Image (cartoon, rainbow, N blue to C red; front, side, top):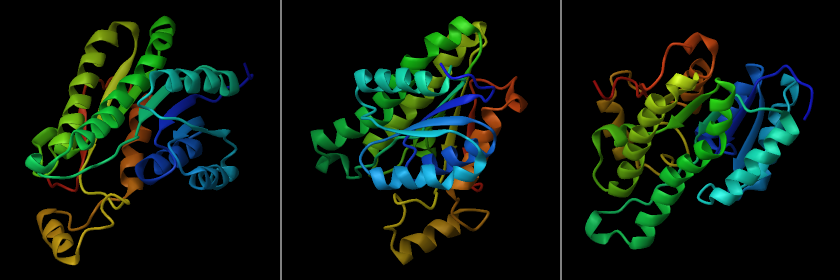
Length: 248
């Protein structure tokens, strides 16, 4: 195990969108970071290059987060490369939007496996070590859809609501061991998931957000940065919305 004084973070979905912003922010904050991605090796390599000036060790791994075996191998490799893990941040997620009457079993299953099972797998692989050391924190990425539901997104909303219940349960279960767990629930964020919105839909969306703009991945990463830090040492089991006032 390397001799390092830097804390270590494990991040899923780190090659794009919010996950990429989280990796970059944590590297700037002084973390060494192991992150996983599903397919785009070029994007993962770019994340590593962008962190070169931070002094952090940033290590990518190709992983299907729906596979507990692959996630366990990822966690073991990260500990071997960087040292004991101090924080887990689960950002991997997919959408397959459709009305329920048109949703396929594949649409339902893929979203639940990636979003909810993936969160379980990431936490399952690391939390026992946190409990033994009586230290560590988990930040899971949900969505306002997981809090209030959303038409055409029964699968996505179910997965994100499940993440909230899972994380709150984890906070209650593991708090006695010094482990914190919190949820970040982004609203409408400028990522590839929202890039396809038509101008008309975008205008309607912006009209509904009191702050008058979509969020950015960096807006979300700022909150994650706070939650994994000692500044949040007495915060656990909470859902923090990052939505520009959309849900009040």
